[in-house]
Amino acid sequence: MNTIETSPDFSTPAPTFNDVWRALMQTQQIVRENAAAAEKRAAAFEAAAEKSRIEAEKRAIEAEKSRVDFDKRMKELSRQLGGQANRLGEFVQEMVRPAVVR
Image (tube, rainbow, N blue to C red; front, side, top):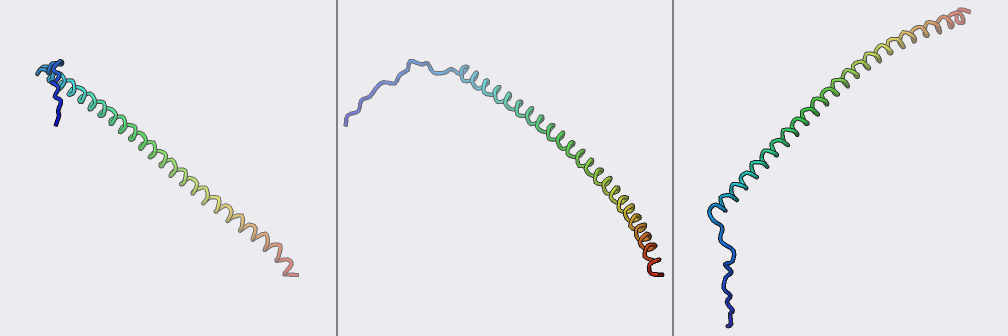
C-alpha cells in the first residue's frame, strides 16, 4: 500500500477571536435589518389589505342602496302598470257593454 502524504498548507492564518466576533456581529446586524424590513413589508401589506377591505365594504353598501332603489322603482312601476291595466279593463267594458245591450 503506497500512500503519498502531503503536508497541510498553513499559509493562511487561523481567524482570531476578534475576527470571529466581528463576523458574528455583522451577521447579527444583517438579521436585524432583514427582520425590520420584513416587519415594514408586513405593515404595508396589512394597510393595503385594510384599505381594500374598506373599499369592498363601500362598494357593497352602494350596491345594496342601488338594489333597494331599483326595487322601489320596480314596485312603483308595477303599481302604475296595474292602474293602467284597470283603466284598459274599464275601457274594454265600456266598449263591450253597448254591444251586449244591443
